[in-house]
Length: 75
Image (tube, rainbow, N blue to C red; front, side, top):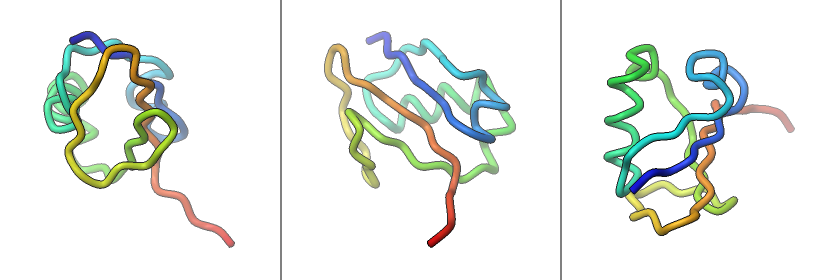
């Protein structure tokens, strides 16, 4: 399925702000992104699906909103 990914911060500096990619779940998305952007292989980033951070593999549904966010810190 074709998904639209929005990237932020240092991740967007590597990928551009918006990416269209064929993926069925987070693992296939990460694999596809790393093939297109090898610099992501060694990077840590969070994934949000429909504005909720996810820490496990999640299957995508039609029209899901996916965001990539670099690590953040602060108080």
